[in-house]
Image (cartoon, rainbow, N blue to C red; front, top):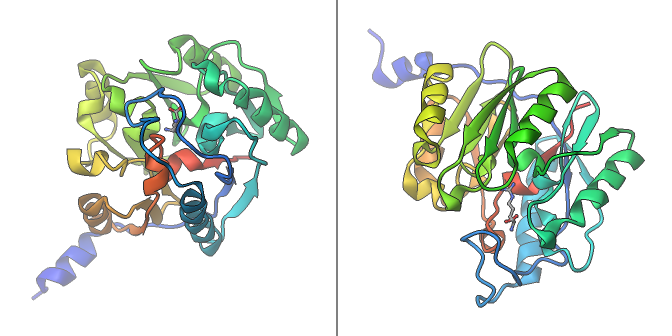
Length: 284
Ligand code: ARG
């Protein structure tokens, strides 16, 4: 006879970690002085040194997982530059540059493109407004692309032509989940065993049809965990770095054979970002 926990252990899929290479930006100039998403309130105080300490915990966590972590110099006057995910989208050594929606962040586009060019990537200067990996996520050989608040649907077409991959457009409908990476997490990107997690309320009916059909075994995250940007997480296929407050998401991840690692980025949440926002994957 098999014991119950033995049974659940046997049912649990085996997950494997693939070492990642990422780009990050230390939040030395982080603050909230403008409001371009509902999380931001310039009236609320921010603590830059606490933001740096919390960010360093994320940085050390990645190093501990064996990741190669590169750093771009923060620029004074660009408080949102810490959210490196928005700096571009990188596959096959090609960096598709970002072109930001709001003037406050526009100078970040050239800053990140400069870094990519200096570090051996082929830079594709964007024609369309897009916020990089904030809205574009590679799942297997498919690029899931968000639109509705930031990246335009014309950027989705540009992406498809650039990388020769299938691009699936998803409409975001909840202003609190304005980037795709706040509403959907890629847990396993290995072709043939793609696995994601998402918040259904962030998508329109057409998007939900696509997500349910393509990813029938996806983890559905509850509103409470989404409200601490729990989905804004980064997975290496086994280890999933998440907001420490996203308790139920952590439980679900363990059930699915992952190793959730919680970090507290409460200060950066004041700017409307979390773990994934601070992380840009570099795929060579
Ligand atoms: N304050 C930033 C903005 O609104 C936060 C960006 C979060 N980044 C992300 N990848 N979701 O643009």
